[in-house]
Image (cartoon, rainbow, N blue to C red):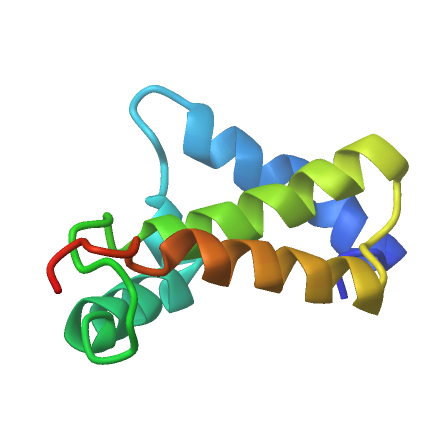
Length: 102
């Protein structure tokens, strides 16, 4: 869990390996679900009413980045309500705008 002391204790090490030059590890190696979600988005976006022109990695990056920002700002993981609101905002943002491609 992102709010757990164990998770918070390990956060500095992956960040260090990602920002070293050259990086010691790729972000996709640390977060393999990013690649899987991108493939799924690319394959299913249009049928689900999402904008297929959006970078397929963007949804994961928005979710992950927001949760990490919340941790850094508050020192704790987000509540279920916060995560639910975040999901609603991300889904609304990925939806194809009215008139686009239809």
